[in-house]
Image (cartoon, rainbow, N blue to C red; front, top):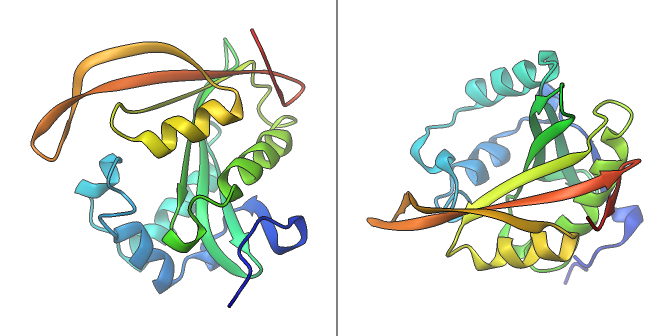
Length: 181
């Protein structure tokens, strides 16, 4: 059985490139269980549409798209953006596309690494993320990263025919490192 625990040498975070878009990527980004808490669950993905998306992200001054790789397998994405350049605030989203990698600390470690890598490009003061109030695994993970809850939008999203709250969290940074504010 393959060891999937986080080991620095086995996991890489780098800018996602069009050549990284594979049929396997399209399968996991299309999986309703993967996109369950995302607006992506309403989209249709193809190899061509994902290549175009990655190309647009590379060309965008306001977004940064990282791929998370286990050895040579693309297993997830980290997206920063849009960027508020006046206030040095950005949004962040993370997706791990293979369920076998969930709950192993991989997202936590790779996200921290991507923050450090982005520091010279995006001088973040604050990174914001939001999630559905019933998305307990994401709430746990972002709290572990050091995010603090800043807001709640009552009944702001529809999840499986029920309205749920949208929780807003922020992570404050100094020199690419999380700090308590």
